[in-house]
Length: 123
Image (tube, rainbow, N blue to C red):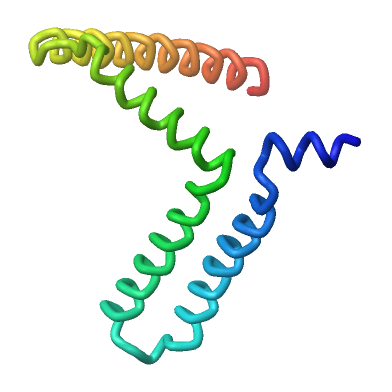
């Protein structure tokens, strides 16, 4: 019974589309290895073409459409983010660097003290 529900929800041929997508990507990898003596530019263009076709097929599935919707929503959310100004970024960076130096100095002092203590005990 669950297979009928999956077919109705997921589209009947989604598994075939994903299989074709995986086969295309595998073909691209094999083709890149097989034609390794050819120009790098031609191999890269071939891989980009095969990847574009594979992504196009994957986007035709229910899961692919959901991923595309998530990416679009994420992009819209990023546009709403209030990014810090250059001055705020610079001030925060300086504060972080100063604190790193302070803690490094404290750890160096602690390491030196422990080193001195261990040498005094060992002799």
